[in-house]
Amino acid sequence: MKSENILKGLKDRDQRGIARAISLVEENDPLADEILASLDDSFVDQAMVLGITGPPGAGKSTLTDRIISNYRSQGKRVGVIAIDPSSPISGGAILGDRIRMMGHALDQDVVVRSMATRGRLGGLCAAAGAAVRILAGSGCSVIVIETVGVGQSEMDIIRLADITALVLAPGLGDDIQAMKAGLLEVADLLVVNKADCSGADTLAMDMESIAREGENKEQDYAKVCKTVASEGKGIDNLLAAIKSIDASHRDSGERRARREKAYDLEVLDWALEMVKPSIIEKIKKSSHDRKGDPRLQASKLLDQG
Ligand SMILES: Nc1nc2c(ncn2[C@@H]2O[C@H](COP(=O)(O)OP(=O)(O)OP(=O)(O)O)[C@@H](O)[C@H]2O)c(=O)[nH]1
Ligand SMILES: [Mg+2]
Image (spheres, rainbow, N blue to C red):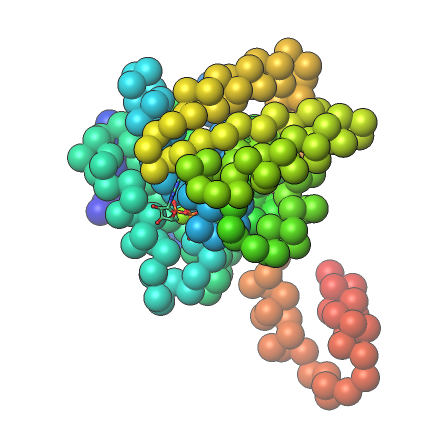
């Protein structure tokens, strides 16, 4: 696709144009600057970025699918960035997410983008941040980032979201315990999905008490919502909770504070991307004997200016 066609496609909100634009920015293509400059920043400012995180199999994609339907019935255009922790070669999870969102495949106002965490050259935050901008700039007023909450890059990426929902489900075992601590800190909302399964009430009660503990900390009270994503139950209530959190974050300045932090994170990620090639070049050129402390060698390399 030629550059003017990509820019036109983006302007026309054409799915292929948007997909191509995201790929080019991800690849740090020379056209990236032009693409990003063509976007309407006011759309980016207004859009709501919703993070959906939680352990594998909790029902994040099924829930996202329902969330899309609900926002679509309100006439909103929706973007989805599905972060895929699997290898880009297997493609398993990507396919799974695509299939689960197939109900929206023909809808021009639902734009789904998968992004692999492994085997990528660039930083995930940089790429996802750019994708958020492109989706928002092409008219998506809600952008969902779905990510499994493990690993540092995935924890970082959730900081791009204005509001984060942690999705849990009964019967997922000890994994939840292990990941809960870190994820709870970033969650504005706790979703107990698979409320039709046994153990859901206990899990919800546990979450309620954890959320109440949170009340004493600096963070806000995290609300607990029960859902049966596979049957579309509890979604209205969940979206009402999201709406009220969004409104209070806008009032309190929390939304702005989060956006500022996210912005800095993206700048850092891009800056690291940009210095990496020159450092690799320096390592290649330097005539060191590969003895002694590599850390010292690194600082010598950087001191060379
Ligand atoms: N019983 C029941 N099953 C559900 C519910 N929601 C989702 N499921 C099923 O749970 C399985 C996992 O759902 P996904 O939406 O793929 O879960 P996920 O969190 O996106 O999984 P990963 O992307 O692999 O991390 C699927 O077989 C769904 O049909 C629910 O509310 N109740
Ligand atoms: Mg999924």
